[in-house]
Image 1 (cartoon, rainbow, N blue to C red):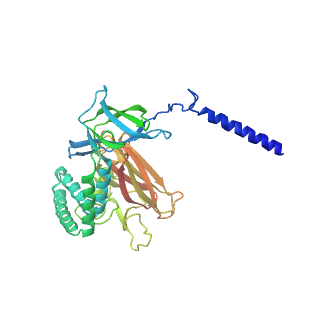
Image 2 (cartoon, rainbow, N blue to C red; image 1 turned 90 degrees about the vertical axis):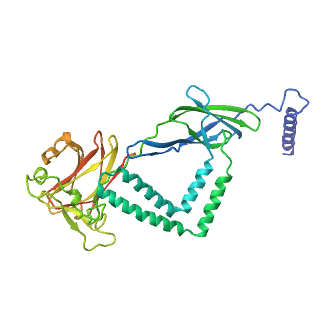
Length: 405
C-alpha cells in the first residue's frame, strides 16, 4: 500500500513540475497567452416620449425621448462606453439633447412628496383643457365653477404643506441641481431626438484591457399622436343627480328620441324604469350605487344613449345584468351605427357594430353578472348604446367604457 502511495506522490510531483515549466519565463512562446476575449456590447432601450395636443388634436409640443442602458457580456467587464447617434444615412446627429435618468427619478420623488398638490394641479389642467373644447354652455358653466373650486383647494393644499415636506422637496431639488450633465460616455442616459424618423444608435464598449467592440441598432421614432379620450357614458349606474350639473333621475340620458320609432312593441312608453335598493347590505346588492335600470317582462322598455367616440379607435364596454328566474328571459345590448333611427333598423346587420345577448339560464335570481362588448368605432364619431329584454323582468347596472390599447 505504501508503494502505491509513493507512486501517486511521484506522479503528482512530476505533474506539478511539468505545469510549472509551462509558465516559466525561460521557455519562449509558452505561457502568458494573450487574452483575445473582448467585450460583446449590447444595449436596451425604452421609449419615454411625452407630448401635448389641443382639443383640435394639434400638437403643441413633443419630446421624443428614449432611455438607453448599455451592457456587455458577463465574462468581460465593460469599463468605458461611447454612444453615437446617426441619421438613417449614417451621418452624425448633433442637435440632440441628453438627459440624466436620475433627474426623472428625482422628479417623481418630488411628485410623491407633493401628491395632493400634484393631483389638484392635474385636475385643474384637465378642466382647463376641456373648457375651450366644450360646445354646451351649460357644461362650460359647470366646468368653470369646478375650476374655481379646485383652484381654491390647490391654494389651501399648498399653504398646508408641512415644513418637513417642504424640506424634503428642497433636498430633492438640490440633488437635481447637483446632477452631472448627461454625456455620450454614460452607461445609461436619455436621448431626446429632434424629430420623428429612423436613426442609428451605435455603442462602443471598451474593457479594462483596452479591447473594444461596436454594436448598432435602428431606432424608429414615431410621430406623437393624441391620446384617445375615454368616451363619457352619462348616468352609467342610473343614479339620481349623477349628471354633470348634479341633476338627473338616473334615466334622463337613456331615453329614446322617439317612443313610436324605438318601441319594440310598436308604440307606448319606452323609457326604462328604476329599481332602487332600499336595504343596502355589505356587500351591496347592486354593482354600483343604490339604483339600477329595470326592464319589465313585457319587453316594452329600452335603454338608448348616443356617445361620442374617436374614429379608428377600439373600445371595451362593460356592464352588469340580472334576471328573475320564473321563466326564460334574455337581455340584448348592442352598439349601433349613429344613423340607426328606429327599432326595426336596430335589428339590421348593417347597423349593428357589435351586440351581445345574455339569458337567465344558469343564473341566480337577481344576482348581477358582468359582461363585456368590444367594438371598433370605424369611421363613426358617435355610436348608440341600445338595450332591450324579453321574457322576464331584467336589470342593467354600472356601464363603463375604456379604450383598448
